[in-house]
Image (cartoon, rainbow, N blue to C red; front, side, top):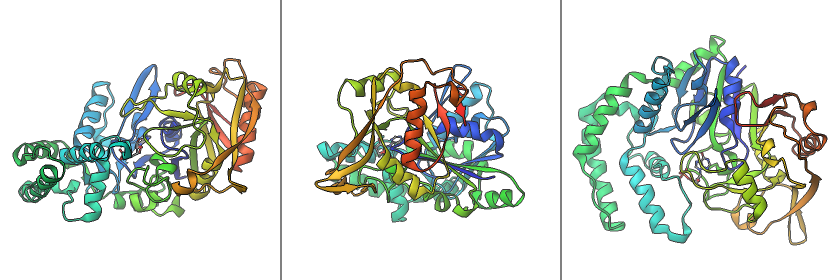
Length: 424
Ligand code: IMP
């Protein structure tokens, strides 16, 4: 079986935990998009692991982890995650493969990200400032792109960097009025990255096809969520990669038809970090309750997340474009204690009923959510192991959303720990 796990909202759905559970039955876990803007959190034996670049599957011993072509790799973050896990007794280097064709996020990308956001003022996107957008822009532009394979030939890399630094310094000084960056310091860092990472580089596409042919089971792990997809999300308030399942074939080199089961992950409510329209946002004490109870603060930036009621129009759109087979719904326990819970079942724009999510934000900004109200529950559900152990109202909530999405909810998260997951 090959799986693909993707987020159905604006990221932070709890994919890390779902991947961690499914990875039990897999040989290989693959990251195919994004970079260190992502943040996966898994709690094992009360130890919290926050990963940004390494696939979440890395926490399962013996699993081979692949960082595929379309990931933008920040070598500094990668090295620090490898070292962090090693210090906790988890050895990674002998089972980590990094695509030689992946592009590298360097210091000037992060600086460019920050300078651009500062210059945008109130129009800013609210990026994580991890250099993701500038790195993907250099990749698409080609002229100033640096790939992981460049770490293999340091003389050539120095020449390439000299050209990049000259161009970026013109941009930094003339456009943003910032200080220029130096070539020597940057090159010294790259020499260190080469000493640590060059032996992990390989043709990951060849490796994945060979492994699938040998009957190995592969899990593809999408970072962020479908509503942040560059082409299908709420542009321009999106990230710079295709984080829906649609990005998996291009990002990994493995066609989507080789995926047997697609699992969509959502939370029992909506969250969003950064700017952009959010039809069911709760800018009130219920939103604060969810933020506090669900610990809704960014794994990467620590920013408070915006919270709102479950939006079945948005999630159904994500289910459709990803051809999702089954759903994992996380954080059900966060809603415990609410008397009434609202679910957005459709939108209205003026007199028109809208059932297909308008990803174009000019239309999305006009929508009025239509809610269905359900009774809440007060019982503690954090130790429920079976669906039948959930309070009746919690079961009804799940079943009502299943009806709206047209897909089964097969996993239900009832707490942060690895084992607080109901499998149906
Ligand atoms: P960037 O990917 O850092 O350029 O940020 C673009 C937008 O995507 C911002 O609104 C970020 O908050 C959001 N974003 C990026 N990565 C994540 C993530 O892993 N979870 C949630 N939001 C994210």
